[in-house]
Image 1 (cartoon, helix red, strand yellow):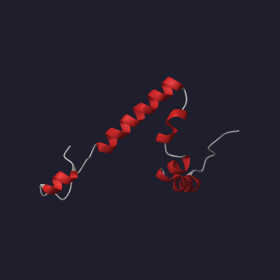
Image 2 (cartoon, one colour):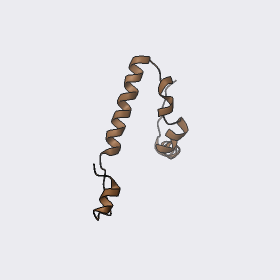
Image 3 (tube, helix red, strand yellow):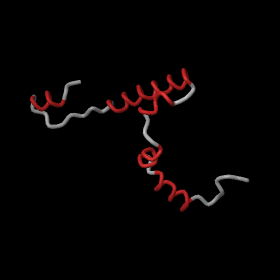
Image 4 (spheres, helix red, strand yellow):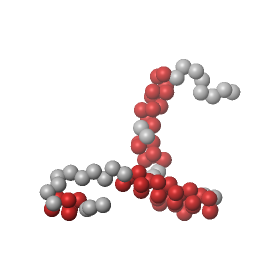
Length: 79
């Protein structure tokens, strides 16, 4: 992969690193799964994980919850 600085020097104004995030995500997932398999917990990888608050923001949990309240008409859990 040619660094953006070199591409600029070659006259390019735009570079697309289409699979970079996907490829690094898969490697992070593999690392997490290997750790879970070997250790049975996430204690050793907490610094590589986002918080639950960050997860809620990334997944737009508040918005999804509002859609659920608006459109779900059947009870989600049975007693």
